[in-house]
Structures are given as C-alpha cells and as structure tokens.
Amino acid sequence: MLRSHNQLKMWILSALFAAIIGILAQVTIPLPLVPITGQTLAVGLAATILGSRYGTLSVILYSFIGAIGIPVFSGMSGGFGVIVGPTGGYIVGFIPAAFITGVFLEKTSFTILKGMIANTMGMLVTLFIGTVWLKFAAEMTWTATFASGFLPFIIVGIIKAFLASWIGITVYKRLVSAKLLASPHQVSS
Image (cartoon, rainbow, N blue to C red):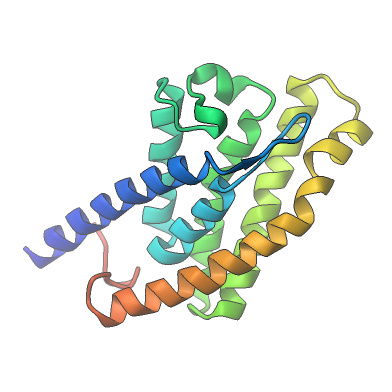
C-alpha cells in the first residue's frame, strides 16, 4: 500500500513538473533561430528534485503533450511539426539530459556541487543533440549551426545549471525531510 501510494505521488509530481516545464517554456528571450527559454531550467529542476526515473517521465510527458498539439512549447506552440522542426532536437535532448542528470545525482550525492556537475552535463547533452538536429533540419553549415545553436547558450546554460542545482537541491532536501518526497532509492515499481 505504501509503495503504491509513493508511486502515485511520484506520478502526480511528474505531471506537475511537466506542467512547470510548459509554463517556463513561455519565458523566452528570442534569438534568430533558437530562443533562450526557461524550459531547460525546468528540466534541470525536474531531474534534480525527482531523480532519473520520474524527472525523465516528466520530460517525456511534456514532450508528448506538446507533440499532440497542446501549446506547451516555446511561444505557445505545439504539434509534431515542432518536434521534427529545427528546434525539435533540443526538446528531444531534454529526455536523455533529465535521465543523465538524475542518474548522476543518484549515483553520487544530492549536493549543490554535484547538482551543478549533473545539470551542466545535462545542458551539454541537450545542446549537443539540439545542435546536431538543427544542422540537418535547417540544412546549415556546421560553423553556422555551432554559432547559432550552441555558443549563445553556454553562459546562460551554466547560469541555469547553477539555479537548477541550488533551487533543486534545496527543494529536494526539504521535501525529503518533510516526508513529502521519498528519495529515489525508496521509490521503485
């Protein structure tokens, strides 16, 4: 009974984080090809707070909701066309980024320093997948793709990685100590 209660709670939190990702995706700084958005911060928070399994589930749910046409992507957009379009690789990249971030924290420790390392790794995974996708979807040169799809996001990505680490680890520890969140090791199917 306790296991199914904890699992239900984690599914609900995953759905909540999918909504948070959709909300923060609307916080946008427009750039010519790929905007800077708050969704990468939200993905880092989901992975840091919920761990690899449920953080990744929240990102998959967010991606699915957007792919079926609900306007949760940047600029209140949605639909499968966004996923297969030039910026779709960043959305697809959120999935392994969340998993890697969560796994790193689960294998090491939930500290701000480890969170910073994990979220930086996640950011680099997202940027790598998104940049490669952008190159082929937009039929750009590697130089142009790197200049518009990778470089502009390094500094802001590091800032978001720090924020996701600091906020995420703080919230995670408080939720665990209040017994509102089980550690990832206590929740299994």
